[in-house]
Length: 238
Ligand code: NAD
Image 1 (cartoon, rainbow, N blue to C red):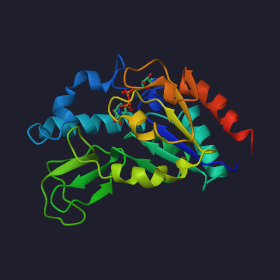
Image 2 (cartoon, helix red, strand yellow):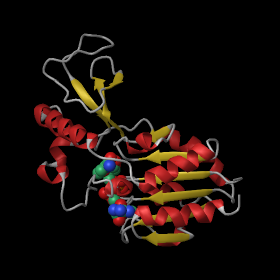
Image 3 (cartoon, rainbow, N blue to C red):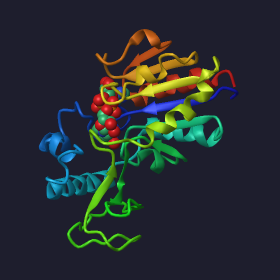
Image 4 (cartoon, rainbow, N blue to C red):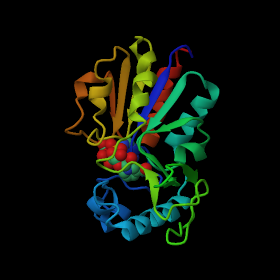
């Protein structure tokens, strides 16, 4: 395969693994107020609730499995490690569990914790984090910890990486594939709209925050179905 492929993914790619999207009808998000558990200006005020929410999310994630879309992308990346880049807004680890390497998590990872004193983060896996008795493995001085994910209203350091990761997509033959993102949290069209490369979109339905006319091909169907059509179309020229 000569061309480079960038997968830009959101909550929809993990929906068929049983992890609800923001708009989903069921799941964790519906039992909590996002403004309390995912908002930088309020999280310290809601400290207990925040940790309870992400402890539940971690316990739930442990029971989930990567789906066919994660696995197909992993296989493609393993076959063409220098050609396939994965950027995700997701905080789950289903790409890694499918075998993907070097996944760029724009919004952090729920399986990590960050120390509010020294700002180091570390892997905690799926454990229930005992935030009242924990200590930082780096500085041992903190009694405040933050799930290592980016809250609304918080600076997202990984956004700075986007410019570099998108450089190859100024080449016409390369492809950006957006899967499972409504474009409401990250305005993906503004980010990729002016790139001359080919662009493919896969969501379940039309979104007000996505301009269909910037895409060369659109699949409104489950990611586990669309992914085979997408990979076939991009690998047939190899
Ligand atoms: P979103 O919830 O705003 O939109 C989800 C999109 O996925 C929709 O456009 C929908 O049509 C599409 N979709 C739903 N099911 C699909 C399927 N089976 N196949 C293909 N597409 C499907 O998601 P977003 O744009 O990623 O923004 C949500 C924010 O919330 C992000 O920051 C994300 O990190 C976070 N979030 C993450 C998770 C996770 O880590 N799995 C889950 C919920 C929310």
